[in-house]
Image 1 (cartoon, one colour):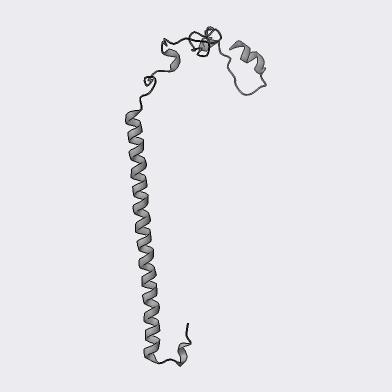
Image 2 (image 1 turned 90 degrees about the vertical axis):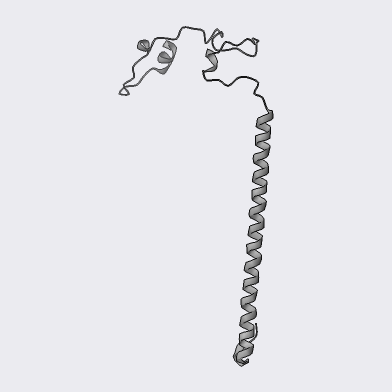
Amino acid sequence: MEDISILSINDQLRILKDHILGIIKNTNQFATHLAKSDSERQKLKDQIIGNVEQTHKNYELPMKRHSTPFNEEKHSVKGKLTPFLGEHPVCARDIPKLEEWPTLSGEEEYNHVEIISTI
């Protein structure tokens, strides 16, 4: 920038005006850039939402939605790789009643292996 101490008032005003116009131009360019990026973001967002809605509309779930746990459903498909809880030998054991469960007060040490084996 020029040394303005030796310039006339008109030259100083011209330099100041050019400087202010440059700032305004940069501000306008930045505002335009922001507006473009906002519109691009909005277009991308709309495109993604449209893709998700279209996929959701076209996609059918392989099983019905469950309002009950899986182990309470009666499944017709049986195989070695699908041991359902109600029919699996390990899970088919009788579950102890609530009063049979050990009560733990937290004041002493417990034999965890013994507690787990009773369950």
